Image 1: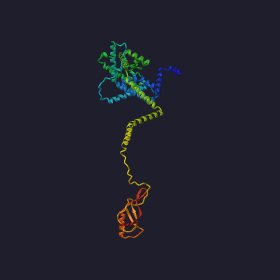
Image 2: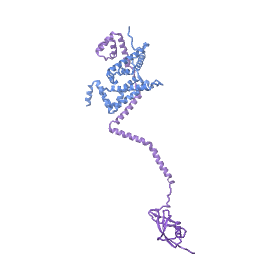
Image 3: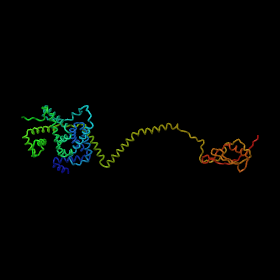
Image 4: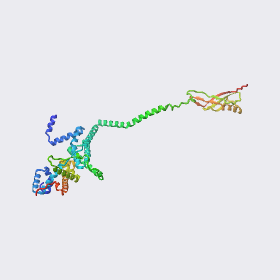
Length: 221
Length: 228
């Protein structure tokens, strides 16, 4: 029986295998299996944290959001109908929680002034991807470019930023983004387009007087 | 995309760079980029931005978050198991009730036990001093019935030789009425002498079932003269 099951699995496409894996995970969670909880945390902790961090720009807020997201997943697993993939469902909860958090912060932290802007655990938060063959100069330039991009992302409208992050950083398809944001594909495309344009304008304005930092290489005349 | 204008091409540049355009559109955009320098510059710009976004630093979740998530997962799993079916819910309710009951009574257990022991101790110590001996002097035994009797006779003389008197005596031992027996007539002086005799004498009242009661009794008064 097991062998037949394995043979059946071997004929599945990667998408079907992923779907089957999701189903097993969901069943495990519904049956309160310890390994299922462990798998869910291992699989989604990083992506959800990254997404929340990109949408909120604050590591401690992102941590709180991740905890809320997982709590909702654990509690609402019974009501998950499977209309969308597990990843889409998890991302939808993460995006909604991040938006709620941002609204809460807007209401409650408007008058607050930070005493210390450095975060204690900051050195463990960012892990720059450094190519091994990169020179210190290239590394510095890339780091500067990354900082500019992050500032650009922070500067654009959160609605457009969410769509842009899901598309360009989390690599979700338009259909998946539409399911996550619960809007039409046309709206998704529109938001992404406007987000890209806003980011491009921001970078262009920042690089106006700094030729050494230009992201756009000049072609020879 | 039938018409590959600068505007339409620039809108599709991200998808073109990502390689998700279909073959016809991709070919059209490529053809336009070869002819339009501005759009080609924009394509390089888009590719640079896309590469930059894809290579943004990956945020490393703090170690505390992992611990918090595992604690949350453990708690939620236990909660899920508790609430899975009716029996589990009942057991959970019983356990919670027992814990609540224990928590409610435990703070009172030591003070209550101490209070009871202290009260026993105090009561035992002062019990001897609290003993009051009952007074039995005027107590009358239940079941004893007696008639009126003379306690002390007054010193007055009745004047006549012998007389039979019917006396009414109340529960306090006082004479409330008297009459001669058999029904004889006496002079006022004689009646006054008999009255002085009986009214100034004291009597023991009659007792019925342990209680002093009013009653009547005949007394024979005889005159005795002693000469010496």
